[in-house]
Image 1 (cartoon, rainbow, N blue to C red):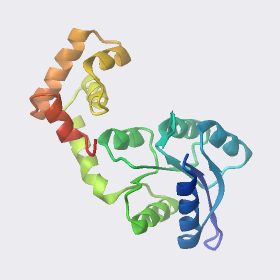
Image 2 (image 1 turned 45 degrees about the vertical axis):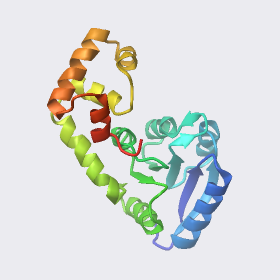
Image 3 (image 1 turned 30 degrees about the vertical axis):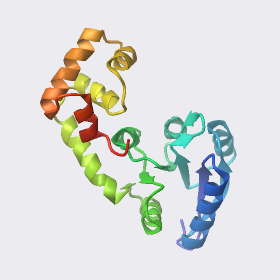
Length: 206
C-alpha cells in the first residue's frame, strides 16, 4: 500500500457514541478511514461480504453476543484481514483467547489515546500488539502454561474464565472426580490453596 493511501477500517461496537468517537479519533489522528460500522455479528458479516477493509476493530462485548465469535469467523473466512479486539476489561482469559485466535492486536478501552494509535500503526506495519500494561499479565499466563500437561492447560484456561468445576466437566466431557483431581494438581503447581487465591493470581480486574 502506498504510504499516502488511507488504511481502511471497519468498527464493530454496539454503542453509537463510542463508534462515532472512535471513528472521529482514527480519522483525525491516523492515516485511516472508517468505511463501515456494525453493531452485531450478522451486520458485520454482511459488511465483510461486500468489501474487505485493511483492519477490523471489534468490541469483545457486543450486547448479547461475544466479539470473539466474530473474530474466529474472520480468521477462518478472511485469514489475511487484520483484527484488533478492544474491551472495557483486561482479564487474562480475554488476553489468552486473543492469543489462541492469533488476533493481531488487543487493547483496553481504558488505554491512552497514544497507545491506541501505537497499536494501530504497529499492525499496519505488519506487527502484532498487546497493550504494554497487559504484557506482564500475559507473561504470568505463559509461565503458568509451561507447568501443565495439555489437559491441565485446557482446565487452567477454563478456570481463569471463572468456570466452576461442574461447568468445566460439562465443557470438556470429564467426570466430577476427574475435574477435581486436575484442579487439585493445578493448585499444587501454582502454589494456590483455593479458587479465590487462584483467581486473584491469574485473573485481573474481575
